[in-house]
Image 1: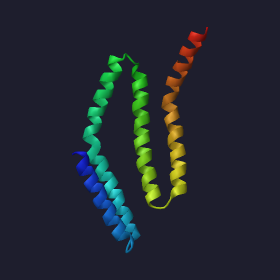
Image 2: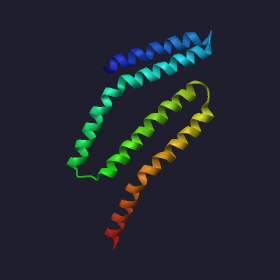
Image 3: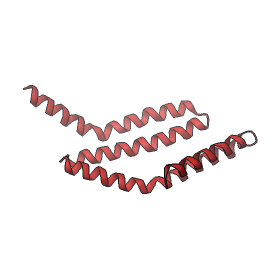
Image 4: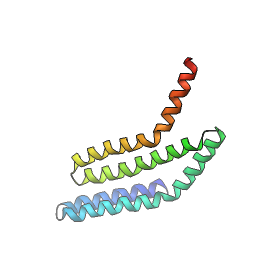
Length: 128
């Protein structure tokens, strides 16, 4: 799957949803949700290659495994949150989407805390 296929599917689903929205808004929303799920599934093969490259980069740079784990968790939360926010906004629930963005940012903070703690310790050692 290349970017052209992804774009064609996206534009086709969007045009169909726009046409359907005049007659049946619920069906148009379901079409967009199905398109988002389908595009996510079609993108999954790229995830493994991205993780392999990230793993190689982390081992080459001799970065701790817990940092790589935190980064992967944060990326996963970002992707899931963004897809959910887009679906909420598409369905007119912008207040829910905004709250979801805030929740995603807070959830990203949790796996990132060990990195911040080590960073502050390292800075403290340089200051002393």
